[in-house]
Image 1: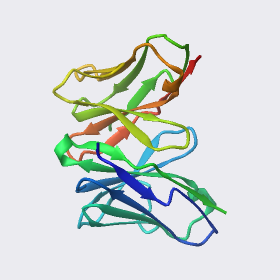
Image 2: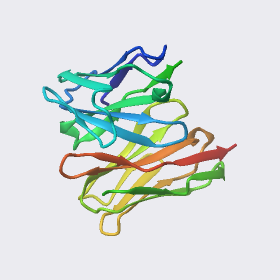
Image 3: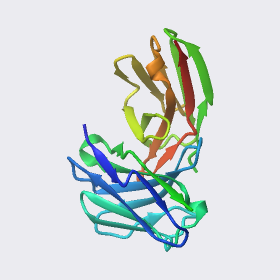
Length: 116
Length: 112
């Protein structure tokens, strides 16, 4: 099946620094990738939809200047959390859509971000 | 605005029991519906995907049904095992933009 990887799996950073998370589709071309965040014991909240070669579409309430998304190729999307604060601590998960599979979404393993 | 609800929020059953997880959605204009499993602190594993034109999908001990007109889907797990313990998430992919809306999940615990 389709595989999506995320890097890093876990990151701890100081308040005020920026953190970049990578999402890669390993064996298929993903024209669309999605970024989610998940708080403990809660479901996934869609943050933005990322299409290759174009600007990301952000959900209401998500600051595009704080959560920078770049989808530079068909296999890579990055999420940069700028000037991170403790309230940004969360589990960030990406997914990629394989158009050959009726837009089935394949999820990465997630990145646990802790901001001190 | 699409809303997805999952019932029950949590479920504890003895090993070997058959069980049903429920998912309901408010807007029937969906492209497909997907069931996922999530283990604590981990990402999501896709279990079953049902296209809007389909009524059910089966994989091993899992069977998912879809009734678009009533806005409901069920995930049936046969002969449950302790290894089935996880959170099960239902997600609806809307037509037009293919935005995915997740339910809050059902936390399942299967006792040995």
